Length: 113
Image 1 (cartoon, rainbow, N blue to C red):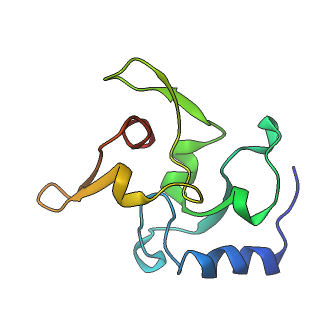
Image 2: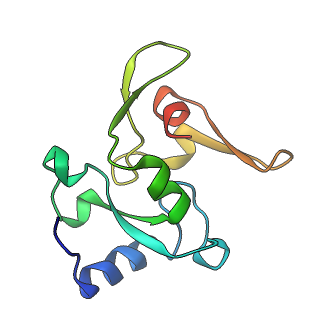
């Protein structure tokens, strides 16, 4: 396991505008520390390149763990998790304000929620 430098950590945070790149939660509402997450985990040969790093709230980081795929319950297909560096959030999720939940709209969105 490599340690992310303070400089790279700050660059990832700034790129994300201080928001979780998975759920969009601002740091001030994060309920804990934010982390630099490897989108593709190091155990799967993911790199420390900025394109493989995401600013993540504690909940999203812990929920995702080292996973990179899961089975979508609707399609029963093995599907890659949402990648905030390659995909557009609004194409995969929407915020149900009445229920205060994020809803997945696509296979990647559903398995990532």
